[in-house]
Length: 136
Image 1 (cartoon, rainbow, N blue to C red):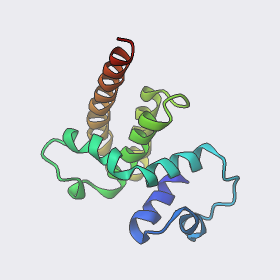
Image 2 (cartoon, rainbow, N blue to C red; image 1 turned 180 degrees about the vertical axis):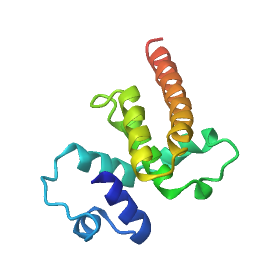
Image 3 (cartoon, rainbow, N blue to C red; image 1 turned 90 degrees about the vertical axis):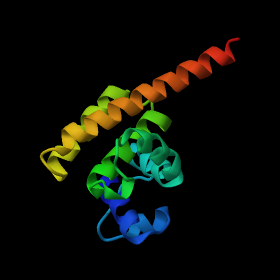
Image 4 (cartoon, rainbow, N blue to C red; image 1 turned 135 degrees about the vertical axis):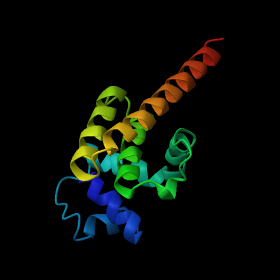
């Protein structure tokens, strides 16, 4: 649902309500689900998420990365940044790889794994720095 929703939002724009009413989504579930939280974080923090991916997308402009790969990486980075208490980073990365294998190219899994693992390490370093500075 989230991949379909961020794809529709990327293609057509719109706010959360417009995305949910998009025929591509066909979402009739409760709005307090994990998927809705994830979608909301992605839509509200797209630039922050991309700022974590950009330095790790070695020699690639973000607009040149296959759209599905980019959307899958945004989902995983959003989980690592904003929903880490719900999904461990390693689980998020593994799910992203599996989604990419199903919906993108044969090589997407390795590409996404490399970028997301580097992003995970960056996030861990940031958290460690913040923990140290807050406890001094």
